[in-house]
Image (cartoon, rainbow, N blue to C red; front, side, top):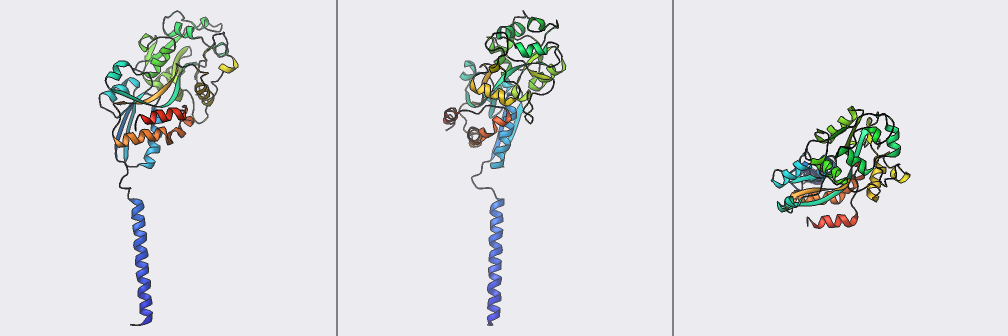
Length: 323
């Protein structure tokens, strides 16, 4: 056999082997790992948690593309009912869980924190006075609960214009939490019922003399970090001295307000914890891994999206619930 032929054949063998290695490498990259998560995670519930949950699901899918999410908003009441009846894996809960729900198997893992904020239309003729004086807890009760305050002049300013109250028509954590601030329940709230957070914000935006309440994600623009046009936060006179002091004036940006919530300057309620609710301790592997992701890597997305990250101690406490 000729020496040149041997060299040619050796080179060909090496080339084929290299090609096989490249093909194997490409195949390895294209094929998911054998232990990669698969399955569907169904979620429904609170409008408050919906935006950040969609974000978490998107980030989780980058790591586990074979997991499918079905997520819908419909209010905390719907999410809790859906979870306890087995219609979804996770109910998004934005209110306290009742003893009756606990008896039915409600099991909650808290994942972040936010607040319900009273709102008004920025074209209100008494807007300047309202922003300067704020509204006391007792005044909110007079407006939303006992009906003793029906005109904006009774709160602040000189223009005698009626207060048009808007509330949630659906069983909502926001409504329950807002009512709890002045010692009431959602069913005690007066006003025209409107479905959902977006609907309530829109109703206040369209009515010059309106008052309502919203979760943070529907009151601020996450790009500019400022309040959306037309509907603004109605400042709470926390210390009740008839004016908004410097340490109560934290509504200009969502970052100022979330800092105030985190440090306790904004009262709780209406600040509150937000959680994933299950019927019993979750067992599906893909669900457990998603919850662990939310409590670890997912916390980096919280502040940017207008929520408050959990403390390290709180994270450890919640992680133990799914171990």
